Amino acid sequence: MNKYVKIGILVLVVVLTAVVYWRYFFVFSEGVKAGNLNYFEKKGFVFKTWEGRLVQEGFQSPTAGALQSNEFRFSSKSDEVANALERASGKFVELRYKEYLQPLPWRGASKYVVIEVLDVAGGKSTSQELPFD
Image 1: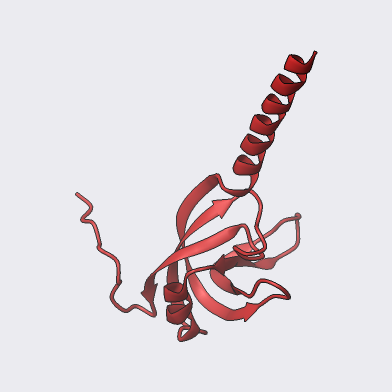
Image 2 (image 1 turned 30 degrees about the vertical axis):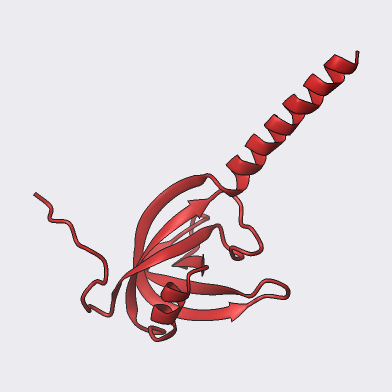
């Protein structure tokens, strides 16, 4: 019986590890969002993280007959991204992000984590651009 308990514990540890990885570290999607940077601030009780909101053009309607602005709330853990966005409040920006299924306290309050600033107010991109043929 001792052998079965050890195997059961090992299976449980492997399953729990896989579930934690899938919920908190698996990148669900990656993409680019563009819009006007509404705010960008560092906040938090224990873990100070950079949080921001991008207001995109157009409107979305979660319920029929209601209108609300299309907002993209995000976090950033990179100092390079934070330095670029601190100076871009109120400007049009393009951001590359990763979406996780659940946020982590030290990664930010949002499941969207910005990893790169592509463009600020029509300026040149700091990343390498690929030609579209």
